[in-house]
Image (spheres, helix red, strand yellow):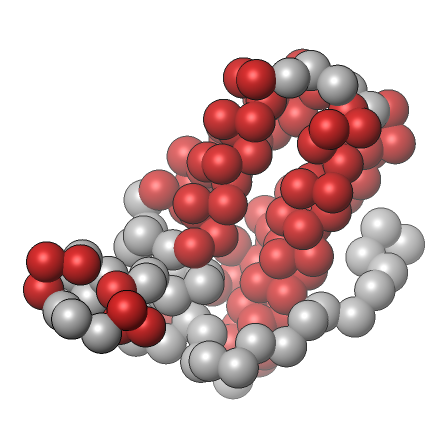
Length: 137
């Protein structure tokens, strides 16, 4: 697809593994590494195909928003994305999206947001790749 150039980043830890419920809570562990949620949420097998298709649409939509540098459209798109992610387990990706939403509250200047938007886009590409691999299996 023309809106999906680029190679996904690789992470040093497993992604889309089965969730370990509440593993991320600081009160339950002393290990700082264990205190963090996974980068991406675990997606139930029955939803993998739908999430992969939606992620493709999200990347294309984000590309169009970025081309226009439209912060209002970004705000609406981000609200939809975080809503979908919030029905899954907590994840660092969800927290990144929430942080971008907070940044949008502080500024409407695209230049202040462009780097953060690029990170979200790369994460979406990586998530899509992982979901597509799971959908084939």
